[in-house]
Amino acid sequence: MPRTDEETRQRLLRATTQRVESLGRAGVTHLKKPPAAESCEAPPAPANTATHTGTSPLEILRGEVECCTLCEPLAEARTQTVFGTGNPNARLCFLGEAPGAEEDRQGEPFVGRSGQLLTKIIEACTLSRDEIFILNVLKCRPPGNRNPLPEEVTNCRKFLDRQLAAIQPEFLCCLGAVAAQTLLETTTPIGRMRGKFFDYRGIRTMCTYHPAYLLRNPAAKKECWEDMQMLMREMGLIAPK
Ligand code: SF4
Image (cartoon, rainbow, N blue to C red; front, top):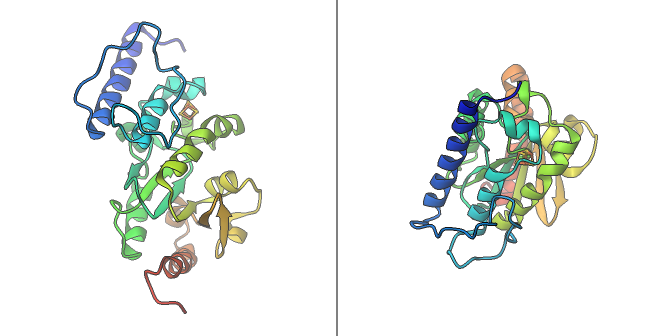
């Protein structure tokens, strides 16, 4: 259905507010008026390149994501992009699939019931959400919470890889089949991927069940906890077996 002028105005207002807030978080207090030709579609700066504004590589990338409309239906339908949150120098990243309704509303990943369970899992690992970084394969919510389409994954892959290149985590934990299979480009079921480490661009990568699955299947929490203990041992947070 075509957007009304008011819907378009509200969408632009949300996108602008989101952009200004993220620049504020990056310490930017003044903006220079851009040349007439400059826009969101300007060529992206490399993720590991500092700029004259002093903005961090991750914040530059966040700005590019906020402007992205590569998946037109998702960009049209989103309330806002969900870039990811946490420590930009985290040793450990958690990777989910895509924002849901609540994440789309709040602009943060894992904030609903699944998010609360993820927070408990992180805290059980003697960590906090401030110490790690949480991100998704897709930065925009697929309608009706359907799985990401292959072309959407391809479109958003460059952002994911640049986020990981900027953060440079030592460890990565994929939550659920979509995140694990997408990242590692496999169709192996999640039950056969968990319990071991993979290498993804030099990052020690493991996979476990998505918190939403654990809410539906509490019996699987035992296996998830075994995965987390394996991760903690590898990170040196608990003694080896
Ligand atoms: S999902 Fe990713 S690639 Fe697609 S529009 Fe959103 S930010 Fe762009």
